[in-house]
Length: 287
Image 1: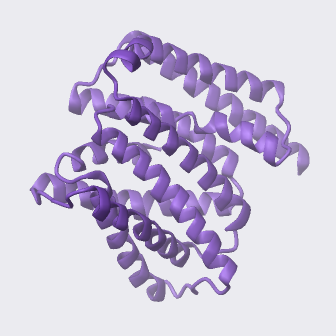
Image 2: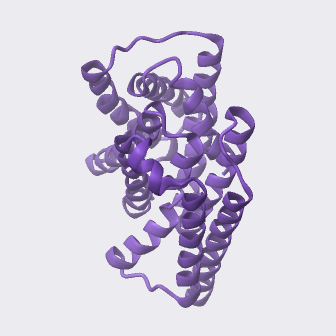
């Protein structure tokens, strides 16, 4: 989750030198090219059926296009990295609720307690940041909406990946994902952005980190864990991202971090632990 958390920091550096969809288009294209070169080296087959291509495309649009697009646009519009990570960090809660409604999974007392602990933690952080007042007076409402869009994208994307892509080859499937995400992001960047890029050393370093560490390293690790049937535990780990991002943003960007906020983050982590413990208990009982 440390690697995943750095994506919010990298995005804040990157969007200072290029508009969000332009930056994402470059990121997706480079990631697709690099991974496609690795496919023959790893002797991995390409997706063999039309359904494989279709499912990988859906995941690419949701997990990369909608999720990353929402995060990058929100940060570009002035939403700070810590708060954007906090909203997306609600993914475990949303995953539990959707899994209960869609997959008919049970919600145990321990899982419910974890959900409530997470909500309490989120509430503390919101109170600490005076979001109720800022949302009305100063925070860009559209930026907050893009954060919510990102939350829905990563939640639905990971659930879809688990449900339909368990037999899709890992690396070649990721190539399809990034290519499909690029086919969405690039036309939108042409339509709504200037596509001007300031190729500074900072931008190049941020882009390299986003491609190599995030798009290739962290995302492939996420897909591998989902293929191994650990979707519930992976989702719960995302609760650990907001405190990591908050600490990183506090160090690098001097974003606000107080004792109340830290307590909220701790409650979020407790919520993750409880949800993960509930899921582990269920799996142990089933096996």
